[in-house]
Image (cartoon, rainbow, N blue to C red):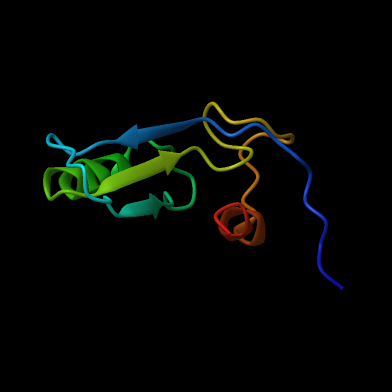
Length: 85
């Protein structure tokens, strides 16, 4: 049986390309590594993706950074992936 996840507010940031076109831009959802937050490692990669024309969405995973969830800093890999689906 699938684990039921709580509804939590996640804080995100969209890294937009310097030049948005009228065409559809591709979106990449970037997930930070365990123990990180959106401004750390994944933020660097998201900036580089935006420089190359992608919209890169970064967010603090549940229980991390500015996002909601208790206990704080809980590492829940299932929740981290499922919030992207």
